[in-house]
Figure 1 (cartoon, rainbow, N blue to C red):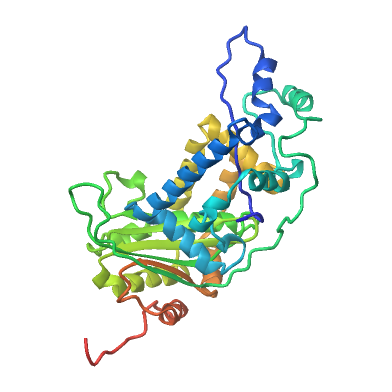
Figure 2: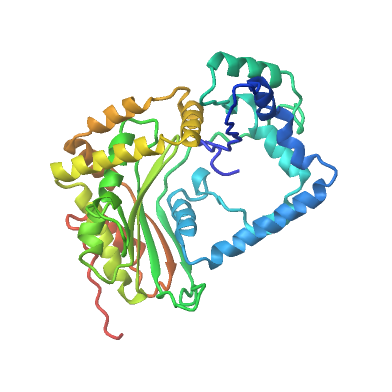
Length: 394
């Protein structure tokens, strides 16, 4: 199974708007029914439900290959390239040939192996801690789950091994438009380098660096609050009108991390686009302006605090942090860590990242895509330029 060394969180949550006369215990009893998690695979019509789920998965896989937005597929490809055939490099989406193999026994085997008490967190927001603990003891302890109580076996606890590499998928992107207005044919490139896990101290500087790079699409109706003063907007999208997208992403896990830039442009300008991205990576290890750093830290803090205004987000934040680190950093602690990031911290983590091998994902018309070796050479140079190539015939 994919990403079992990481924090994959499947949440079951219920939001209750209590009246004074309603009994909290009765509501909690409904929420904490342990054996209800197995109902869908133990009901009378379980075979029909599994078949309907297979059809839904098949539809989603077909939709993934047809949708105009390639970001989910590119994210899958960049992980495949960065962690070749291990942990986070394995398929996140179910391979088409495996859909028909999913049955009740497979589901129960998965639940038996991975839905164990040591891998679970019960989180509550707006509930007294003692009351939540009492309800958990009453409704969770001693209950037999639908998949049985046999001991878990075949748990893969391997650590992610970053390999670097390239994943390419040649595809005609000229007919992806879903409506009468055609979408320009684009080639999509994603270049990434290994960063760090969310357990390391460098995680916060990497988060600030990612926010400083920012980016987005070539059109935005927003102003400064939309990140229009980030590096990828100022240095890429504002200067190169033919670039349709330039966005920075940071994927962080328990034992590794990946910072990458996704860019898209006309297939005839792929080489120039790749060189622009490699130059931006090199600039990460250069001088960091105090104004842009403070702007990135303020934007990251603002995003954190605005997200935590939502109760479901707070609930998920509690569950994720406790599951991953056995503790929870409060918002003011995270804000302090963000404020303490200095220009030399960003330069240090970026310089360390640039010493690694790149991971590259490419989708679309790849006729003019530079070789992996040329991309690696550009990221090892001082200016990020690709090696010059000469053709006798075009």
